[in-house]
Image 1 (cartoon, one colour):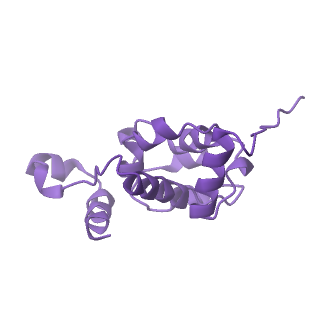
Image 2: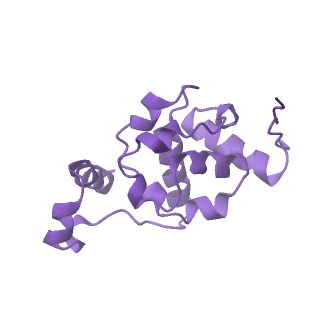
Length: 140
């Protein structure tokens, strides 16, 4: 069986983005080997445009523009299920939080959920953790 090692040029655009996200999140992105356990356990995966393991892979590849434009970084409810499932102990929720911070710092997006803009019927269908997370993000 052959293994492939992901190599990032530390001075190139990919390496710079990886270093930035690793510094903010305190996580080693390149430790992820894409097992998918984070995505399999995520209660919000059905609502995401990019799954948690794909977030990590795209960050590894330096896909900053696509990540910061994704709905996923705002959909994540920070329930920490992904963190508890990761066999490499990568705290994925912190990585996603660092992407939100980067987007806000760059003035790219502020898609924080305004719970009052959602119809009562739609709010009834949301998992309770999504509502709680939205309220937390409104105050941060």
